[in-house]
Length: 300
Ligand code: AVJ
Image 1 (cartoon, rainbow, N blue to C red):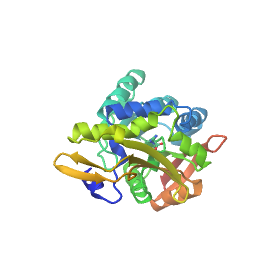
Image 2 (image 1 turned 90 degrees about the horizontal axis):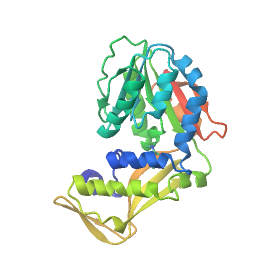
Image 3 (image 1 turned 90 degrees about the vertical axis):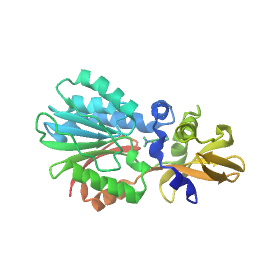
């Protein structure tokens, strides 16, 4: 956090959004009418569950990066032919516990192997009781879009290693579209996304003994068409100095601190990125408006 705040412009990695309150606010964002991503991806998965399951094949070990609330997981586990295990890799302990609790009752035959970790670093995957035919990494929600290109390729490479030779990955990506639709999705009228963004400051105050005055900061999310991404900032309303422990950081009036990228892809650009990680797109499922896509990747 100190490293990011010392940079110009200031920046904080978006993974820190997800404390218990942040994870809860994210679930609320998903229910907002403007935030089409979750319901579009869910519809794609529902509509194509059988096709996805047959592309994956029997006895898969399902590894999920960022388990969230587990609704998409339930759908996938339900459709899969005799899945042997489920490994959610999740930074938020509360979200991890919640997802496993519900799933283990519903899928008693599936080994539940939660890993409380940051999936941006390589993790040691636990082995299920029954040998898996293949490992499938599930990375839904366009979370890949929260990473800069270089990091995203690095993450895809980590996935390629973790899935092994016979493995596969299912990656949800948000597609490029009318900027007005994109900006509405990250500036919902009810202000839930604003609260989600500012909760980051509340978390820093609590966990790092900081004194951010929440009413002196604003949420700002804009589409950068050149870069193909929504850029979310925390904007200082006034000239002010914030203390974090023994450190002091000056904010100028109007100064924007970067807190999140949400990349929006052209399908061919995503395929090119995957190729740089040694992966190829073998199947792709989308909605009729082409707003979102679920891409299946295998080793090139
Ligand atoms: C699901 C984590 C990818 O970037 O769209 C939602 C997070 N941020 N609204 C996204 C988020 C603001 C979301 N991810």
